[in-house]
Length: 117
Picture (cartoon, rainbow, N blue to C red):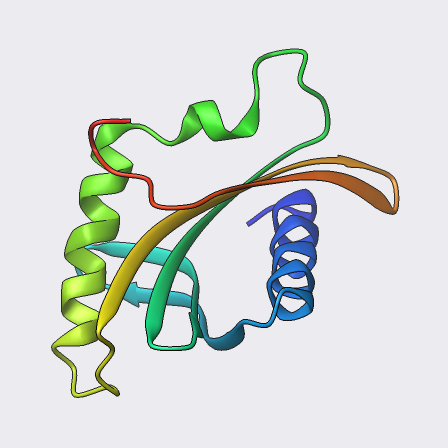
């Protein structure tokens, strides 16, 4: 992962914690893929893909989350949930997109993404 990618994930974790989420895992890997952040809030578990960019010149970071990536996220989430972790009544897939300008960032949080979006 690049320095910018790591910085973006660190900012996303801080953003989620500030919004009341608990971070369960970072960079969870399975044979089927990787999930940047696994968090929970209340009775919901949230699988988060973080996309970071230094500029919107070539497009916005969230535009890089395609149906194949979402499918891999779903498969990896199933692997995580079947590994005997705590049970949750709600499951959600989110994207956090950041455009980083030095020490500050514009952050967009897209809740409940799916293959149809």
